[in-house]
Amino acid sequence: MSLETSISDKSFTNCLMNASGAKCMTLEELTNLKNAPCGTWITKSCTINPREGNPSPRYVDLALGSINSMGLPNLGFDFYLNYVLEEHLDGNDDLFFSVAGLTLEENVEMLHKIQNSDFSGCVELNLSCPNIPGKPQTGYDFERTHEVLTQVFSFYKKPLGVKLPPYFDMVHFEMMAEILNQFPIKFVTCINSIGNALFIDDEAVVIKPKGGFGGIGGAYVKPTALANVRMFYKLLRKDIAIIGCGGVENGRDVFEHILCGASMVQVGTQLMKDDISVFSRLLNELEEIMKLKNYHSINDFKGKLIEL
Ligand code: DHB
Image 1 (cartoon, rainbow, N blue to C red):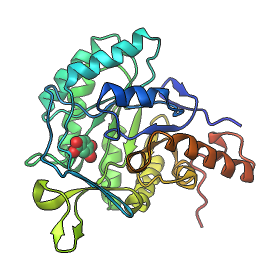
Image 2: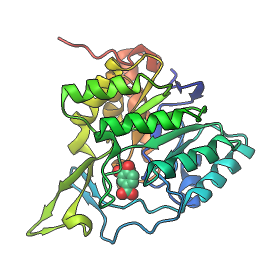
Image 3: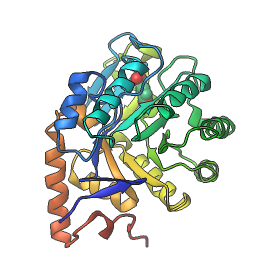
């Protein structure tokens, strides 16, 4: 049995990776991911300058998921560029580099530097961070998304995909897919957290930033995540891979993301709840399901959700 999968021209030994933001900010965390049995891994979304992020508490584990308003704490672009270049020297170019500039100019500046570097892995351009006060989520502004991609692809030639926010309206799926299909995008990652949700404990909010509003992940978001994976799998060009993200707690959830069309599946909230051992458990559980169903590879069931 093989869990091998591919994105762009890269193949990976299995379909699991972390979701950006989950245990991937520091060198120690990135080294743990590198040594874990996931197919690949991704760095914390970065900005040009290092950031402290929002005031704490800013991440809370909930019974059915998590809420976060981290505010893009990260060690700054140079740290992550140096990190991926070290990996390149080590013979590994198949990790993902997440970029989340606060402005279009900042994204362009970082992508120019990546373009001019030896890094040849995939960049996940984050168009969907919900946690920066005063900054809208680019992915909800269709015109702006078109403008960002036009500028980016005017010079960027390496494999690049976008991390999208969840959509909830059929017309929005179609509008976004129509935009993405115009560009040489290699993958889309859906979904980011369901932004600006509110969780209450007794009579109070549970996180400090933005009056308690934050991005929700985990089991709460799985049906929305699957719907986004499914719709983009159907609407995007066949050469654009889907990376599923949202609500993966067990092997069955990984299986469902792939059934909907995902080539790769990210783990966020559950990686925060468990530890790095989550990957071997998920792989074992996925293999058990595949064995029962007599599937030998991801391609045997990818996208093959039965519709009635
Ligand atoms: C953060 C949260 C996100 O959902 C994201 O995509 C990027 C950054 C954060 O708050 O740090």
